[in-house]
Structures are given as C-alpha cells and as structure tokens.
Length: 367
View (cartoon, rainbow, N blue to C red):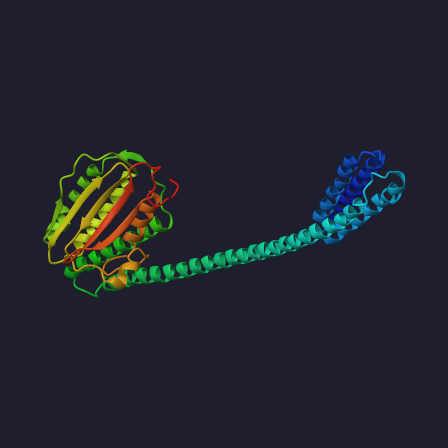
C-alpha cells in the first residue's frame, strides 16, 4: 500500500511537469510575461514533491523541470531578441526552491517521525501503566479478601467457642439444673451475635440497590430515636434532637438511611458508657441535606481515623466492625458522604451528607 501510494504520487508529479512543459512550449516567444508565469508554475510540482518525498524528491523534480525548460531557453535567444537571458536564472531558482523546500520537508518528516515514535512510546508506557494498575488492583482485592476472610474467621471463632463450651456443660450431670438456664442464654446470645455478624457481612458484600423515594429526614429520625431511647436511658445518655426548620424532601431509600442513622446514633451512645448527651441536628439547602450526630465521648484516636470504615475494625469489645463499613457503602451508593470530625473539648461528630435530588451527586458519581 505504501509503495503504491508513492508510485501514484510520483506519476502525478511527473505528469504535472510534462503538462506544464507542454503549456510553456505552446506560449509564443513574444509573450514574455505569460512565459514567465508558466515558468513560475513549475514551482508547484517541485514544492509538492518536496513535501511528499523530502529533499531528494524536491531536487529530482527541480532537475526534471529544468531539463524540460532548457531546450526552449537554448533556442529562444536566436529566435526572439526580446527573450531575456534572465530566464536562465529562473532555472537556478527552480533548483534552489527544490533544495530549500526539500530540506524543510525532510526536517519536518524527521520531526513527525520522532513525534510518532514518542507518541507510540507514550502509548506503550500508558498501556503498561494501566496493566500494572490493574495488577495492583487485583492484588489489593486479593489482599482485602484475605484480610476479610481472616477477620471473619476470627469473629466467628469466639462465639462458636462459647457455644461449644456451653453445650458441653449442658450434658447430663455436668452442672446443676438451676444453672442450665444461664448457659442456654449464653448459647442464644452467641447465636444472635453470629446471625448479626453474618447479616452485616451480607449487607457489606452484597448491598441492596437503593429504592429511592422523596423522604422527610425528620420522619426518619423519630423512629431512630424511639428505638434507641431505652438503650440510651440504661447508660445514662440523653438523646437530644434539635428542632428542625422545614426541610425539602430528599430522594433516598428511607430504610437504608434509617439503618445508617441507627448505626451512627448507637455508636455515639456506646461511646459514652458513663453517660452524656448525644445531639442530633439536621440542615439542608437547595442541593444537599446534612444530619450530624455529636457525642461527648473520649473521641477517636487520630491513628484510627483512616480505619474507621474498614471492615471488622472496631474499638468495642462486642462490636463486629461492619456497621460503619455498611453505612459508608449505603451512603456512597446514594452519591453522598460520611464526614468525621473531633469535637472540642471532647467527643466526635459524624455528618451524613446526602444530595437532595439524585442528579446532584456530592461526590461527582452518576446517580
């Protein structure tokens, strides 16, 4: 294909020179201006050949054009006294133009080739980088799966050990009948713990897509605070929900957002075993709604800040470490975000930020 294209171009250049030669020879000698114009037209195939074939293409075409013009120039002085010898200088101009444009075209071709090579190298480097990134992502996923599996096994092993120990003691003659109920309760408690762990694990690994409905967030907070009121009272914690101004309806899955708020408010209550106040606030503008939950607990160690939403990370003795991980999954699927900030002088504030409309993703994600 390349050779065929070059042959076609060479034929076009040669034919152009021959046609111009025929036109040039056809012009009567007394029409000097027309002859000069015809002679200048030879520059066109010379420049074209230089652009197509480089230096040697321009020089070859210039030489061929000069050979075509010379017979007339040699005969002209004897036949027409008006024919100026200056036209011999035009032949030299043809060779000069062929050389200059040929050199320029050759340099441009070299630069184009260098640019093409650099582009190809950049493309290869980019492809290699993408392959390395994909490999790194696969390794990270495998590492995360391994860590997740190890943590899950650890979390399951503890309640299973408790269940096994309690079951052994329930054998006939092992303990008095009066103590059996205590160990039955242990089995029930640890079974519930296992069920909660597996449910949270499924929520994290296979989250349900949100079912969006226009929702008043104030109506979500009412059942959340009602469900946790008894837990808060047992630990001496006061749940304070500040009055909210009229807020726009938020496009969200109310059940999933309720699950997130239950988890965050419960964490705030459990962060204050000695009692305190958990304050819940809500605010909104035209684009987004924010619910903040503030506690007066000891706060979060700065070293743990980056691990808060990691699966199985917890600072609580009875925690599974999946609550916040599931909450972040849910909010991310809503195109929102969860922010964590320390309070002064103590405590922590969690902020759940949601777009009011599905098209207004805070994180720039497609909703």
